[in-house]
Length: 124
Image (cartoon, rainbow, N blue to C red; front, side, top):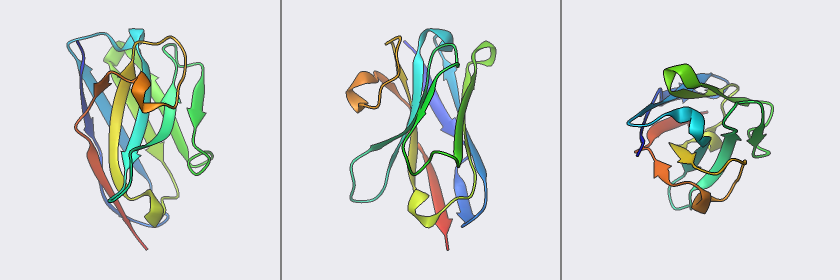
C-alpha cells in the first residue's frame, strides 16, 4: 500500500545533530502508526522511537530519550527523527516503518511497511 523512503543520513561527529526524514507515497500516512528502527553491523534491528497516528503519543528507547524527537506532518506525508548530541553508538542504518495498528508498539513484527534505510555514521 504505502512506500517509505528515508533521507537525511550521513557522516557526522559526536555532539552533532542530524534530522532524518521519511516520505510516504501510495498511501495516507495518517492511518498508520510510525516508528524508527536501526541496525548496527552484526546486530539485530532495534527500536528507536514511535509516534501515534495523531502524533499526540510518542515512545523512545532509553538511549534516545532526551536526545531524539520523533514528529510527523500528516498533511505532507512526512515523519521525522531529529537527533541531537549524537554519539558513536548511534551509528547504524536507520529505517522508517509503518503499522496499521492504532496503538504504539516496539515490536518489529507490528510493522508492515519498511523503507530501505539511510546510513548514519558518527565518529568520535
